[in-house]
Length: 163
Image (tube, helix red, strand yellow):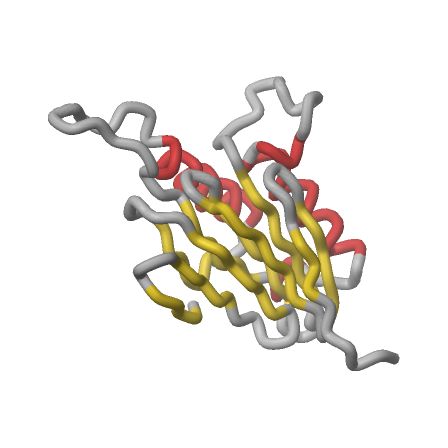
């Protein structure tokens, strides 16, 4: 068994799973939401980079793009790797309102809708959401350590924190 840490990049509208000592990372979370599942006993987990709230029958183009379909697929894979439903925990970050126009109310609020859809899907699956860092008007890059369950959230001009 190797102790070399691999950083596994999760692209937009994608998900990946990993086991200890690896780290999952995604960049460019604006209105998108990065959601992480973790089994602390098995030290395995997954990360999805969600672009939109619901597939509404359109998941055929890319089911990893949508909160409802991506989380369900990632959940099944984490279980197949040895995760247990009752031990799974979740964290999320992103969901910003990236664009606004002076004097106009925010139009689509896609970031808010993405964060709400992720929380709803986790609730439907019975997975507790331990922490989140969502909203605002700034992008995020996240690193998820499947060994510890720490989610490191980095932002430009807003610093870094662990949730």
